[in-house]
Length: 245
Image (cartoon, rainbow, N blue to C red):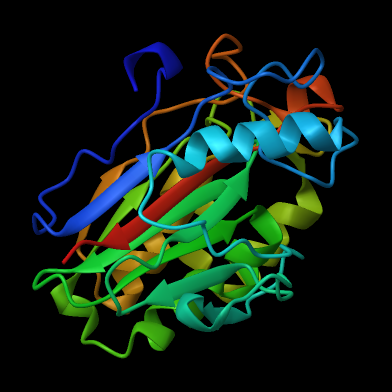
């Protein structure tokens, strides 16, 4: 994996919990999708996407349980996903070798597991899904006490780059007044939003106190990450988690 510059979650998960997060490097796609674009829905050459997914597959126990992400809160059982990707923004697995995956290019990927290594999950948390409760829905689907869980926050748009309008701030504050602490007023009705802080707040309110990661910025680190906010037309990365036997 070193030539691909891929990432593993840095957290105290059980040994049988495995993670892999791709970067933009190590694939065959041409600009503006250079080079390891895994998204089949962004306008890239389908043969290049297939070749990239084949390279990824070599590092995994199975093909990832891909989702058709719609910025919602639906959670799928990854072991029940076949060739047709369901409309969902998170998945969970309890069986070894089933790979949960969240595809992103600025949105926040959240990986979850329990301290005994029984259940894993991956959530795609753009601001809409995060605000509407995709993390809460994912934790509920795992059907374990939140105090038994830990979370890792993967590469997303950083707090110095995520400029939003007042309506985004208001949507979060309407759900929880404490969310105000994750927004910095930069004038003219605009704010800088900290999506990592917003996710940590939601996890803490659920009772998930062990939260790791959250120190990336997909926008600023252009050599390593795809960014929709920065480039418009771009590829997608994947954050994956699974159980080993």
